[in-house]
Image (cartoon, rainbow, N blue to C red):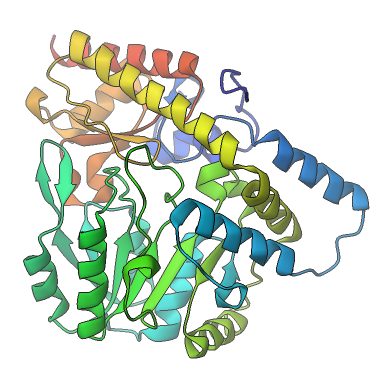
Length: 393
């Protein structure tokens, strides 16, 4: 049994989540605000990862290094065991993060002015990254009903025909927590192949799926895989974001070489020695830890939904199929996002993510991170209710 109850004091640790609230939210009382916004966990890293890091540090020498075959094998075993997808070590291209991986793929295989398709609502870097690289971002909206999302495949196919160079897919979906079906993933992969569109699949939340749902990798359903670049990492699963370790799975050898060449041109340095150490330990020993984590997160999500249903029935809390993020629907309150955020920050003293950060489709929603001890979740709900009550005065 692992401990997911301890409350760690993360203030004054140079934590973006806890120590940059004044800058991010343009307030002056950040030290009074409970942060449940950015997607990192308030749980300690697994003890076996800590042990591996301490052991590596005690070696005492930190010259230039690379992720060895043992790291690649750990990844292959994890993806096979957890996601029923067989990959080869040679298919791996290492990077510091999933968003840098996405940027590298766009730099390598698209040109300035090319059109990149994303779905909305979606994690902001899906739009920001291609835009910052001079690509034109094209958005098609997901269908939404009571906070649950689906894909209109006819609309998707039509969008692909509008001179699209690449599609960036969020699987599982952030912020909605949707686990896309095998049929949906296969249809999208096949349509991109038929329309000569690069398929960039962000699968960073793949390990954080609640039973009975199963993550479906793009590679597991594709008849043709040369157009697919899968981006994965242990950082969300094991709370290792500060160690910056990720990888792409690329079956096409020419694309792998192009990615490496582009990384060299941009002076990307890949994964650090400690990132590689943590990744290997997590994937070799982490299966039981993840299962216990998911139980805690699921309990937290159900607690939030039950409290709000009882004490603020206007608020809807759809239960996600994946991630540790709630996508809270406050549209029935009929208040603006500006007023809601003001109430949260100044009355409840709680920091959540405003829905329109994920695109206009997110208006009327808030994203709440519940990957934290139950004590913190309870305090977060208390603060949320204080904010909601202030809006009804």
